[in-house]
Image 1 (tube, helix red, strand yellow):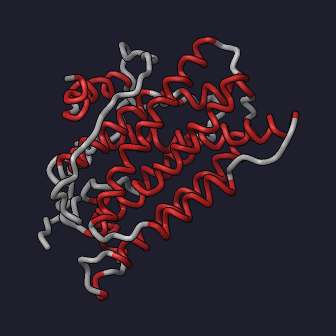
Image 2 (cartoon, rainbow, N blue to C red):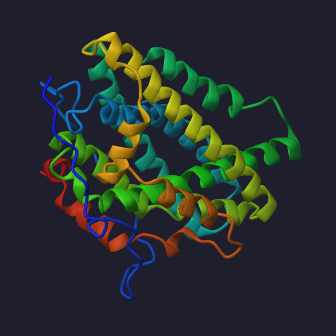
Length: 308
């Protein structure tokens, strides 16, 4: 197994980008018909490291199920939308999220064909989104309340994904450690997360906007994301067909080395992101750069290939 030394990163080389004075508040959203050929992708495609790769794979496994859930809930919410701009944004969001799901599913399918058994964890993600947060046999105001509750959860999750989008677009340490096709998949997705970062929050505000409901949804979503992602990383390390049993344990020093090298967000950065959502005046447009996201999407190899 080829490995690369994880070097400390320049802390100024990546991080949050504030919207500039000429940054567009929003752009017309549309799905991009992208695809990747995963032939000969190494099992440990991120810095040659099993831990860092399976940290990324943990998210890859969550995304297809999560985004199918997002699409289903937002389609149910569309008839309740009375604002034309919110409706247009929701339709664009649905198209982008459906494409995200299929793109990440293609990578999951490839890794499973290569012998990485992801099904046990995917079953957990499926239970969370389809059973715990899924449709219920409700009528009238109860059905509307449950729909809005789930829109609030999606808005909370999108706070995290837009943060990760902003962080990942500026993670210069990824440039020479993440396999180029996976780098493009991840940055294409993260750029679209920044591009549509306002949509779920605007929909929630349009339908309800309760601060108590917003906080409650975040207090549900944030721990669930942490637990599911951590369990996914652990479970994939345990079944990695290229590792010896002695190599399958996650060590604290591996986690520390990874975030110090700039390959994953640091605990302090995640902590700041966590408390931001509690601000009464919070709005996702105040974080990240639409111009930066659109610029990456214009240069993405997969997007350019799709345009041809």
